[in-house]
Image (cartoon, rainbow, N blue to C red; front, side, top):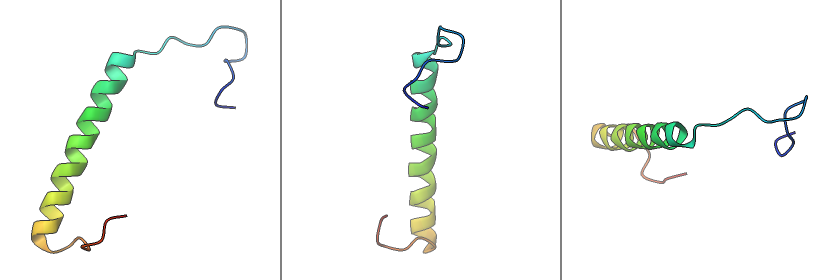
Length: 48
């Protein structure tokens, strides 16, 4: 499933730079929201 190539031979090209940028963007959003919820008292003190 995940480790196999796409049916028909070649796997689709992946833009790693764009994926890394998106990961960084989502990480910043998560950190920001975690801080905001913590300050508002809406986040349990124990992390998952």
